[in-house]
Image (tube, rainbow, N blue to C red; front, side, top):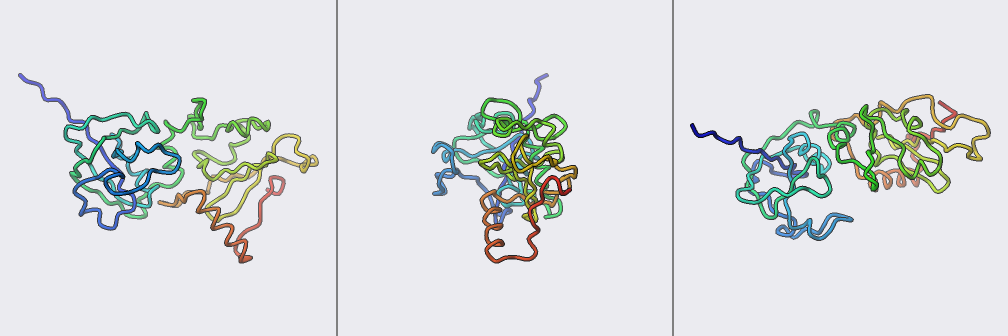
Length: 245
């Protein structure tokens, strides 16, 4: 008896798409006249990106401001490894056919922490080391280790805290921002401003970034903070220092 080979299924996150059910074909960025992504090689414009994981596709759709995932048929196109997400993603050099579309409600979208968890297998530093431990806690980034931080210094952020909202400064102070734009500081060992005080909070930021679908670009978040500071927005909470909580 002839055995049938199971077909590999591929999903693509549509991102911001006003009419997802009208999509019949996913074209490359070059075909659509779009520029390359920031800091990405020009060749990325020649590909359509997908994953064998629906959750991964949904994560990317959410990051792009969308709520829809479509199953795609590459036809005879070869599935190449996505160089940016080698464990999770593939790419096809050319357009692919949309076979079906699924739109999820806003309340069912993944949170920022869930997105990080889904994409974490490919979140590594330039030296190839993982950004997150198996339990989801952020491992000390290279810039932080250079200032004397250790892995345990970041546990107060909670599992799968998005590193895009962790900002270093020139003097080693590191700031974690929540979705309300409030800044929370942590200090490196022996910082002159400590004066014997606690350098890492006793409290936890585990409740931050748990709103479905909310994962702004870092630049957009910082611009929002800048505008609120310029307007002297009374609802913008003050910086939280580690010895205060």
